Image 1 (cartoon, rainbow, N blue to C red):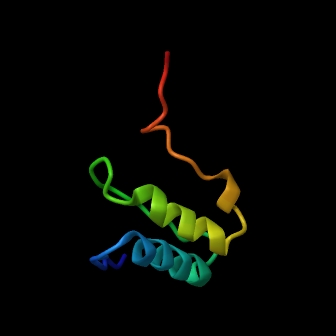
Image 2 (spheres, helix red, strand yellow):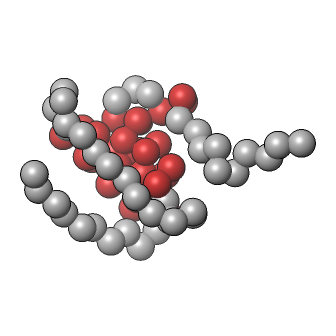
Length: 67
């Protein structure tokens, strides 16, 4: 198992990082995301999904409002 830490400076960079990782993943690879609310996990995942043609199906429930 390898671990790599990357620091992103903006939302665009986070999206592109996710996209690039998605392009280089192989079947069976496991990606774990951990972080506080608002740090960019969904943006990263949307970039990842964009490279895997799943972009329009990715959303976050963290900001969903329930009445």
